[in-house]
Every structure is written in structure tokens, then in C-alpha cells.
Length: 224
Image (cartoon, rainbow, N blue to C red; front, side, top):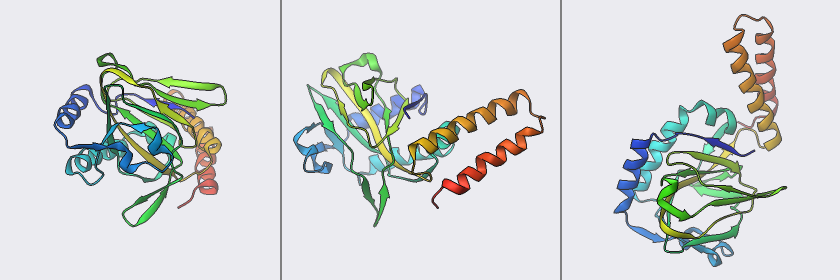
């Protein structure tokens, strides 16, 4: 499932992120890439332990904790703290696939979902599209500043060369309570339908039974 979640960051906060990152101490992005990805990764990245990365990442996680669309779609169990990257002057990240497990603070997080939070306005740079492969070919994403793309971490993807301007983004991974992408998609669809019915026919007696189906499926499918 590919899902765009708009306005995770409001426009003014996305601008504040860009301003904070403008003077950041950037490093070679290859430092955190696997041995194959190092050959195709050409960008800059903020160190994971950089105080700015930790501060901005904590703000993103706080917002996501209160974003009902994200919670419903991802059903998060663990989230890798967000990282931040920068592309400019022709920088590019070639075809690659994210590692299946990320170490975080002495434990490991299974990467079921990948997330990219776009921080730069799309008209401020040329290129830089996130290209994600699926069974129908390759999808192109270039979202507004503050918008989030959620997509399967099993997907081969790349970032097209940035030929003008600067592309800033946050990125992270999620271990879902529900490992199966197909099951997550069904639960997301059911949850959305329940919300609409709860708004339109709030007193319908079948809503309780349908809500029971939703939560019993989570009990059956979820890891804890």
C-alpha cells in the first residue's frame, strides 16, 4: 500500500525545519548505507546522534503519535527515529532496497514500512523524485513540504538526481504490529469505513458488531 499523508508538518513548521537544517553539520550519506547501497548513494545526511536530528525527529514522532491516518495505516509497534538527508548539485541515490532490520539503541526493529517526509517545496528544486517500483512498474512521488509518503519497505526504490535547488527530507522505518501488508490494507480499509459510518449513521446497531470484527482481527493478526 502506498499512502500519502498530507500536512504532517504545517507549512510554517516545515519552513522552520528547513531553516534549522540549513546550517547543519552534514556528512557523507554513504556512512549509513549497506555495502551494495554505498555504490549508488550520493547525498548528505545528518548523523543519527546529532542533537538537531534528535530534536526534529522527536517532533515528527510526537506529531505521528497524534495522526490518526498514520496510526490506522501503519499500526506501528516500533519506529526507527527519523533521519534527515539532503540532495543537491546532481546528487542521486540509485536503485536499492532498505535493510530488513535496523539496530536501534541495543535492540532491532523490523522494517515493514518505509516513510519519507518531504521538507522542501516541490517547486524549489528540479528532479529529486522518489521512484518506487511495484508490480505495475515505477511510481514517482514528489510531495509538498510537510507531506509524508508511506510505502512498503520491501520495494526497490531510488531518488532521481537533483539538478537544481536542494531537496531536504526526513526518512524512517516502522515495524508494524501487523506484519502482513495485505492484512494492514484490509484493516485500514475497514477502519476508514467504520469512521464514515460512525459519522453518517452513528446509532446504527451493526456498528458495534463491525467494530468488534475490526478489533478481533487485530487481536488475531497483531504482534505485541
